[in-house]
Image 1 (cartoon, helix red, strand yellow):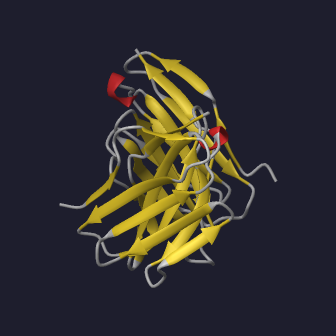
Image 2: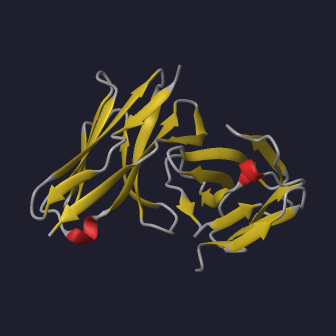
Image 3: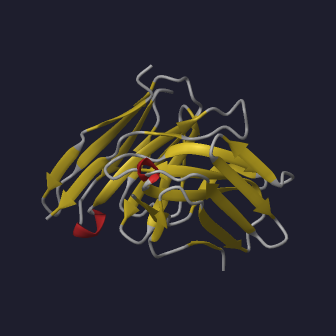
Length: 114
Length: 113
């Protein structure tokens, strides 16, 4: 099992550019999450999904969109990148069938918006 | 307002001693609480989970306590080693909303040789 993988590992964008971050998991997990982590702010939930075809807003959803077309993939899109979106982005997944199961995190995507 | 608070400053502990990290929360009713470890440049890794009706959980050198009256969890590492140096995050899963987990900002722990 590869667990949770994220693509790309690092990206530099100019203000106004768009990009998509890809998260993939091979554990057949129902729930998937996108977080951003900034110094002094901890992990903040952007969007999450409780199953294929469903998404919901988290704590800081503005400026981001997501899609969950396949159970194993969760995409995070930035339509028009802003310097405030410079951050480290983590994807996570967990199993719904055991309600108190842990989250498994990917290695992160470092995004710099100039 | 709802808050999860962890020691904001780094914690320096001498090797071999017990490290104790604190997680306090306000205006939450967590169903359970988790502790994660995060190394620089890596994603968080799950360590321990404790349910709201449990007082204490142990795993090897790790021990977690959960006091819902004090609204506090303590995370202990006994016989600490330099390899235990990392940032430790606490996370709450809320009653009836266990599809979302709320993270604290983390405490950086340094074990000094």
